[in-house]
Image 1 (spheres, rainbow, N blue to C red):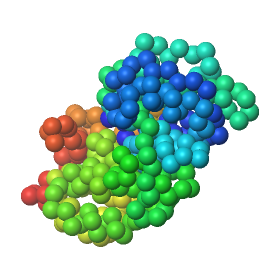
Image 2 (cartoon, helix red, strand yellow):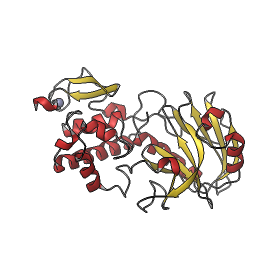
Image 3 (cartoon, helix red, strand yellow):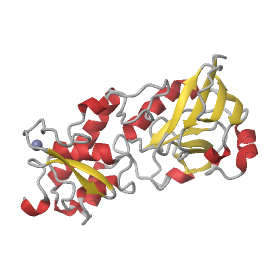
Image 4 (cartoon, helix red, strand yellow):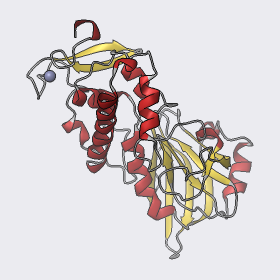
Length: 300
Ligand SMILES: [Zn+2]
């Protein structure tokens, strides 16, 4: 799954190309990629052709493109393997291209956005916008307090200027579950997945299974700061790439995998204490931690 930095890399890449651009053509190559769109492929093409995109907005792992003069947005769900690639009007994007948008920038220059999705877990949909419950702008890249229906239940992410740190710390400390499970809870905070949860927990020296309710306010605040720090560092390196699926709009992978301290490093020595990094089963996936500086809650 791409996490927040990988999706933000895509959003930043698309923003200058889509802002103020008119959709001149829509090609649906695979209708399975419209599974979340109500109305089928003909409706999708008809509704988007001639529309002007206002920008590229993100909350957590969701990215959407508000349509000018309409309370609708084109929402992209990247799923496990979705990519949004940018081309120059003649690009063909290969055999996994599912949806193609031809745009004309305000300068008159053509630009093409290809929604490429090998495993078809992602999709695109045109959705109605609804008011943001807290009345603030919905996410990165958009000043209006409107949000697509499918994103409205997702909590703000820690890079959102309207993320409420105190409310998050209080909500985290009210959870009796393990702290990593709480970090992954998209109703508490969005955008954090397995990779960055492990990295932030390593940086804070906290075991993933420690009850969230046992964290002090100070430690919870530090953990939140470490989540932000790892996001910022990953963004500066273009995100993390574990397979070739996570790419920017030009098809390039990020470099942050080299800077990971715990995730994916089983069997290696912890760079802080020299202890062993171990991989353990967690929620049907894996968790990585240092055996020595992230001790299980019972032996603390
Ligand atoms: Zn260690």
